Structures are given as C-alpha cells and as structure tokens.
Image (cartoon, rainbow, N blue to C red; front, side):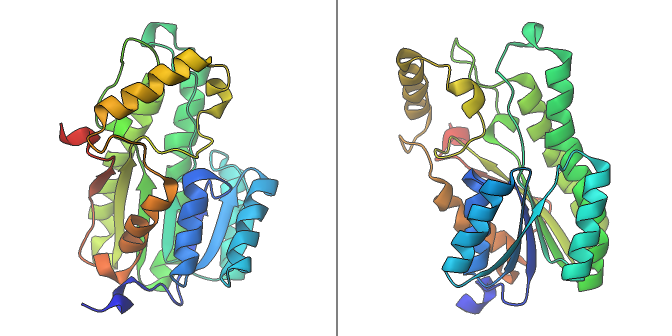
Length: 267
C-alpha cells in the first residue's frame, strides 16, 4: 500500500465548526494532506485564525461565516462554494452545541429544539446543499461528527451530558447510514466518527466555566476511571482518522460509525 492513498491533493474540503477544537484540527489535518480547505464557523475571528494557521504552514484555505441551522445562510454558503470552487469532495459536519446537562425532567423545550436545530437539522441542511457539488466532482466523502454519548448513556450521579445532545448524536448515525445507502453508486461515501472525552474544545465551556474545582476534579476522575487508556484524547489525535476517511485509503468504507474514545465503549 502506498502512502499516496492518504493524500488529498486537488480535493476541496469543507469543515464546519472549524474555528476551534476538533474542527480546527480537522481543517489543519486535511490541509496538511493537501486539500484546499474551506473553514466554516459562526465566529469570524476564530475561523480567520484557523485559516491563518493553515496558510502559515503552507496550506490552502479560505473561510465562510454562516449558521448551519439557518436554511437561507446555508443556501448562500452553497452559492459561495459553487462560485469559488465549483465542486466539493469532502464535507465534515462537525459544528455542534451542548446545552447545560440537566436531567430529562428538567430540560427546557427551547434548549431541546436549539440542540436539534444545530446538531441534527444543520448537518441535514448543509449535506443536502452540498451533495450536488459532490455529484459534480464525481466523488465525495461525508464525515459526520457524532459522539460516544450517542452510543452509551452516562450519568455518574451528577450531570455531565444531556438527553438532547445524546439524541442528536445518535441521530447522526442513522442519518449517515441512509446517506451511505442512497449515494453509494454515485461514489459518495458517508461515515461518522464518535469522539470520546477529548480536551481542548469549546463545546461545553459555557457551563463548565461555572463548575467549581471540586466538581471539575470529580468529572476528570470519572473520565480516567471509565477510559481504559486512562486519559483524555487530544484533538490532534483525530487527524489521522479524518484523513483516512476523507482519502482514497478508505475507498470501500461507507455507512460506518467509528468510535475514537480510548476504549470507553469497549468495556
């Protein structure tokens, strides 16, 4: 097998939530493998930083600022990609939110709807918009970012996740597999990854900032206890998996969900 299989030269990739955390690492990894990366985010400052990091490393990147849950803004993003590149080979649906992790009976309906809009309807809207550009390119790889929490429940006698987040991430699995079945003969593949507890992300910082040191220590202890590797993952460790799924190295892989969790779901 040649390392050439993993190269993405001549490929155009779009990464949502590319302004920070996992999305930034995905964008950096794809660019390092040779892709022309379109970095998308709602935050212009963050996503501009990602583009600068790629360009300073010799890669090619541009940015798009839009809300994936807004159908009109997604349509504008599609026109932008069409005008700038005319095609798309890789789509990573990474953008997502996590509300305060209340238990079910305490969940506010507005929070539930917001999480569904961004975590599930957003990938639907954007994938629906970008599929024609993949058909025009003659091939495509869609990578949906699910979560370990979409595979197993977790409640260590205190709240660290929630039902809305879990439901949307589980929903992405069915979404992925249906896309894979519908577009396999068009040479468009769809797979999902399920990250475990990775550090260095902004996903839940809006409520974790209110946690006291005792709560944080308890949370980190639970992560270590439940992960056979005994540690958090680092966002950079996901780059290899994403490059594999985006490249010809995985040309016969579609409809799959791959956990990246240090063994959490193995026990």
